[in-house]
View 1 (cartoon, rainbow, N blue to C red):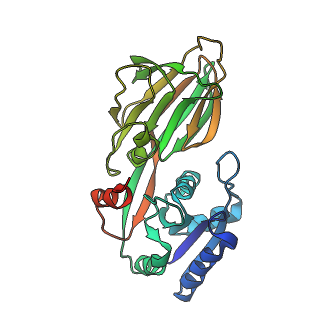
View 2 (cartoon, rainbow, N blue to C red; view 1 turned 90 degrees about the horizontal axis):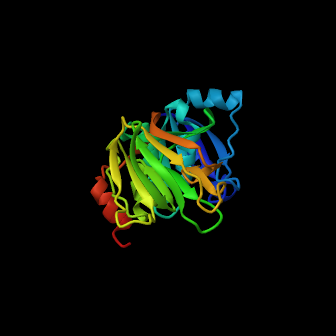
View 3 (spheres, helix red, strand yellow; view 1 turned 45 degrees about the vertical axis):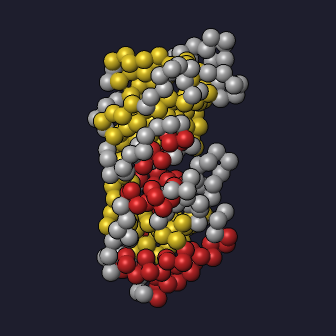
Length: 289
């Protein structure tokens, strides 16, 4: 690899100083790169500028370097999913499940990329859409999870779950998480869901604080389709439900809305420099938690 596109979270890399150091190192080695600033807006969505020039640069690139935390990489992966480019994360965050390279090891990692000394992991993504009155009013993709949850007042929401068109169950809960294996160590884990190897291709359905004795997660194959039917609120708070994609792109829901979630056609390709097993990574990242 010699052609790079660098995305830096300016909130963590002030003035893109470190990203520019990386660019300088790449150019000294005979490579080429473009540095782009990634800004997080108040709705948690990345502020991307997809003009024709940027599109051409991305199509000519071989790799995207992401300077930031896991959140920056997730948003970049979603925004650039159509380019099928591999991502290498440089950790400026805290946990760093996806951004494996620490800043003090970044130049060694760049050397490994130039020498083709790496491997790529394919991570499945989710595709979700909201259907209202028979029309699609919102659709998006997620790398970690798609979450249906209450908003506003502290009241449970009522909803029905269908699997491949077959009725499964009614829930009264704070919401429902549909997670990928990559997202199994995020909100899903906090809600009591299982940890799944990111190499697997499946979906995890985890209720959030359900008002029931049975609060188990359900693990489903990637070929399944999950449907969430939003029921009328028993107290008339029908507008206080929402859907989010990887914690952003929040869309307000109404009673009668239907949410369809399935495996996306796009994948996220994550570059790994070190040969570290998933179990070892779990020990390193979460062994003290």
